[in-house]
Length: 91
Image (cartoon, rainbow, N blue to C red; front, side, top):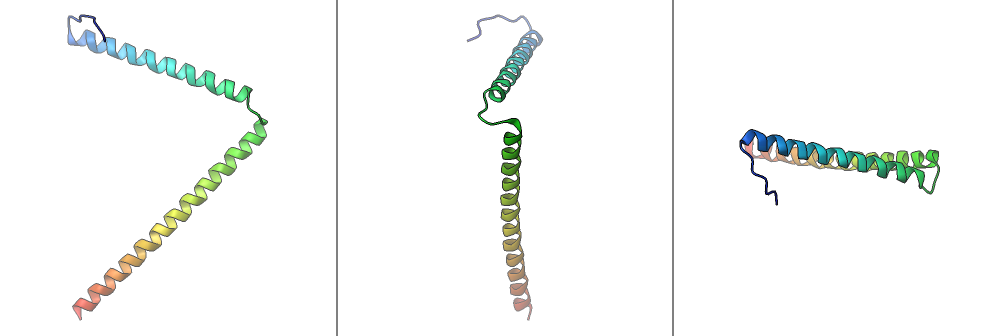
């Protein structure tokens, strides 16, 4: 792919860093242009979009809380069962 001849490892590493930096720069520019175009051609107003995003985040957080609470309840039940088994064996 790359047919260049580098005379030192440092020169090759520097060239790779420059390529990576350039790629990151173009990626950032592309993402910025895409975001601007998305906002310009959005089918709803900014306040509607913000409300939609806020409700989506709130719903996601509620689902995460529910899943976490469920997991904690299952862990508590398993620990309780484990303690009961240990107590039974010690008797």
